Length: 243
Image (cartoon, rainbow, N blue to C red; front, side, top):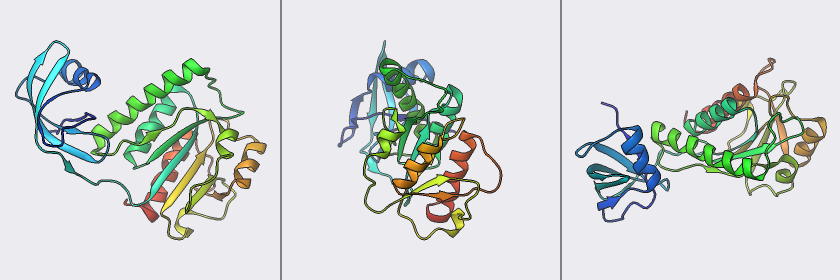
């Protein structure tokens, strides 16, 4: 029987009766159509989860009885950040979903010169909320207890102007590179930059190299933006993470 997992920030440390947050309650009652007596697993997005059962549903209010939360660590030893050029809706959603399943710790959507998608402030805020929902659902499905951080969309060059984190290795895919993931030394923290559908403009690539990025190859073939991101993440996890 499939285990139903639901994101529920604010789990009580001692367990017991708990009213689900509005988003979780709506998912439980309207989407999953659970009823009193049904069992589920709640996780808080900060490393803890607890078994629970539904005690009562009154309109939009869902009350559960939860066990004492326990710390569950399913995170990769390799801290991965994906800096992804914003692409069209379904492609971007796919990257957000699968990157979460592959253990990414942070997702940074960036606007580039060749980005087909253009976002004003209101659109960016709406898209961020949507992506956060995609990531939460991916955590529910994959068993993660930590919710990856999703940053608001920002221009690539603005992001590149920020200093790299201490101990962070930075990679930019380039078919002409002789370096493969299997050639890399031991990694603890890695950032991967992927361009949008049209790739990075020459000046953006140069800015990335000046910011400490190094070329990494996935072979001689040109991959779509969503394929490149997921293949590279899987390769890095295989050589330095937990795949």
